[in-house]
Image: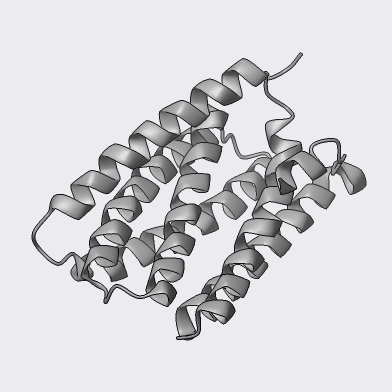
Length: 192
């Protein structure tokens, strides 16, 4: 719903820095929403944290998705759904606790986020970065795919409460959206 609201927004003000500033705001907001959801045992507070993640991400997604042909968006959405479903089943069916994956996945996520800031800056300074963003997108697909396995493996091991369900939904939503964005960047047909 939020992506529909923002699909006509033009975030190219300030030479494209407007979209970057908005994206950083969404990143900060989603981190805050995740912390709120994960640190609370109250389902209402966790749902508020989920809304702090999903709402701004939806607003960010609208202008981005609007750059691509509808058929391409639908194709990538279906592919993303299939990937998350299969990897989620893998995470659920693995009998071992994958908690040990947490620290390396967090480290990989921090490196990926850093790469998305550093590579464009290198390009601004004249360093050739052709293909680096594509490589980062593929690394992101693999990383968030591993996070789907980890998050669903973790979800089945938590006590079955409404609060834990909401907390798990926040993590899986973020995994899904990040895989979708990266696959759309890699495989989507942009509008002319």
